[in-house]
Length: 154
Image (tube, rainbow, N blue to C red; front, top):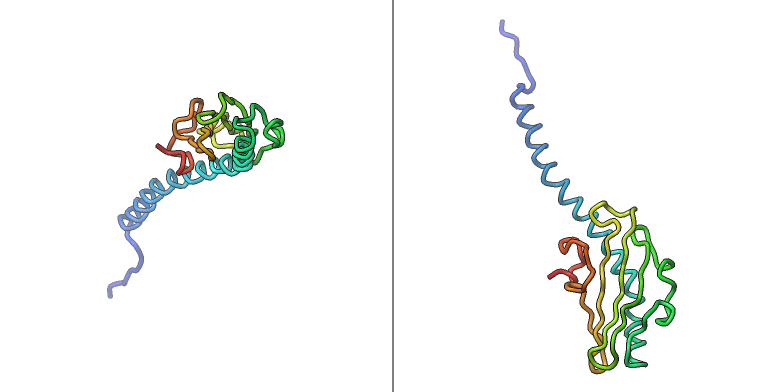
């Protein structure tokens, strides 16, 4: 009488392990990119209040403020989060149409190593009755473009 054996063969188990390894190899980098993007987006969110203050300052005075205090926002180190150490208003140049100002977001060591100590710069340019913002080509931005918020990607 033959004994009926049930179960998986070694090759079947090895194939399952290989498939799981391939799926993990694809998923882990995608998840890491997602985590880094969420950390960078914190800086964009924290900069929104300063953007509003700069636009209002420009609307009233025809130029941009040179510091956080003159913009009427909290000191740079007071505007922080889990991954952002400071949001600095500065770099004001010119007045009237074409005037420029900047908001610099500095990431701290709590952020992923690919973002830690890097900066994202939002550049404001005065236009007739409005302010336009750019962060794709702003000088000083050194956050990898693939991690920047969608409005900041080239």
